[in-house]
Length: 339
Image (cartoon, rainbow, N blue to C red; front, side, top):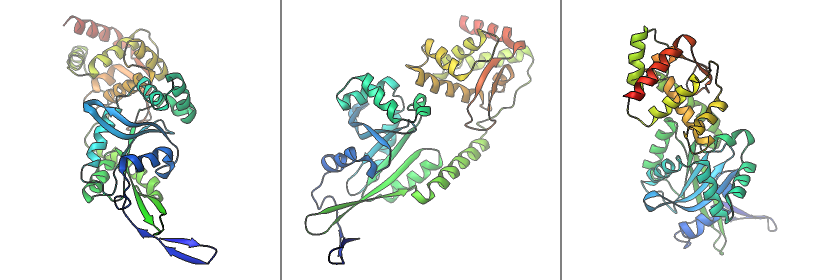
């Protein structure tokens, strides 16, 4: 790399150096630069936390939000990523995935030194309007280092194949030998020129893989009433965190003989204490929707109708219980309540 001396029409060679050689620290230098200038990593990031403490006293470097309302975990290393930076970031992202809207506003308020209402307003102003209701529906990871260990590169590429949004950004320092330091950011995964192509390829790969393992189906069963009751009870007595949410969902769509749209259902689920806020209730509704399209649940599709684009990941809407099965479902819910 060269620095241009315009006046003397000359080039001054810049020598690649290391942050350690320049006596620069990960926490007190690199982290501060990125906090104040997140665009060096990616355009349109809003930093909402620094040195964020999570359970087990672990601490993530920087927490941000992007324009699509995703939480973005930034994990920083100085001169080399080591072998475990990817695992650290995944652990942080898993904790952050449970953050409710209130948690996020509280975190940002603490970072700004202000109140939660002001923090919420700033986030709402930053995020694209149509994405605000999906706050923290997805999480992204950005790993930052001067060099990346081959193990990390391999695991990041594998994670991306399975739908985990992980990026790697190199920060390379150069010195002119006269006390000036220059930083060159370089996104290596995914390469900017190929990002759109890779995202589409990864989405297609995910759809093909999921269809092969049979996780998605719109096929309905054709059970007689006794068999149908048996299958429904078996599913609704299964011990899982999702089961009580599915039961409340079924009770809601039984209250009236009509179609229930997503927005109405999110509100009604929240009123039933399903989710700490409307946004989380919406994410739980997405989980219920996925449950309804599992290949192993054709009996639910026999009694419940909904609109969908017909492929994996399509938003579902306008749920209702088919009229011929309303009394049967009421009976099933009453019986499982007694057991």
